[in-house]
Image (cartoon, rainbow, N blue to C red; front, side, top):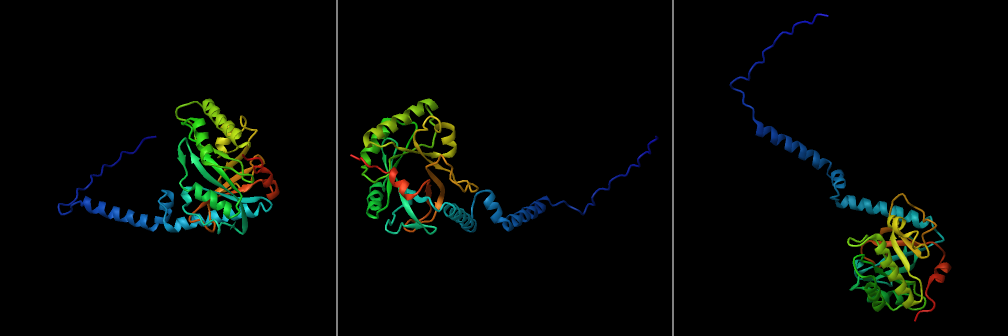
Length: 279
């Protein structure tokens, strides 16, 4: 098929009186984008994690909804908290309930690594006892420090008594200087040293992914306390003796958010877990 020849059309040139004002158009575009950004500021703030007070309040509301759902869907289980120096000064006489349920236990951070003692441990430890709170102490394990030195740091700082919960090893990180197998040997040394001193087998705390990848099989003879804050996880799993289901709990006597946990059993069963032959 024969193609038609295109007729050439010569483009006219701008008249001499017209001048393209590039800086003006740039300024208008910037103002336009700024207006859009301001209009959608909350959405953008959420997207980029620069959260406004309104968004933070909404997040707290959603966290409270999930916390209520988790607590109310486990009516037979024991609710507890865990605290450290980051909670500031705690009024333990007011720490009694959350979401209408009594608080049945509290884990308190005692030490971290080979030389750190939580600044508020001694006060929290004694005040919790005076408030008749079932208490337990935990150690934050630093994977690049000597395990036996860390065990000794905990043993020196914590005097457990009959009726207290077993000591807890908190492990959350992989070592930067040693293999996973070497790290596991270090964890085992800490656990053995602490068990020998207190005559009770420690509890191991970790996140669910860490537990699944590194601890579940090799340390299956230990009681596990697992952290999982997933909004869509609302039930405790059978293999978890304790479940830390939120870090955004609201508890009387504590300023700001606090970790909240469930014990996978009744108060009577929790009593069987406590120490009975402390030295």
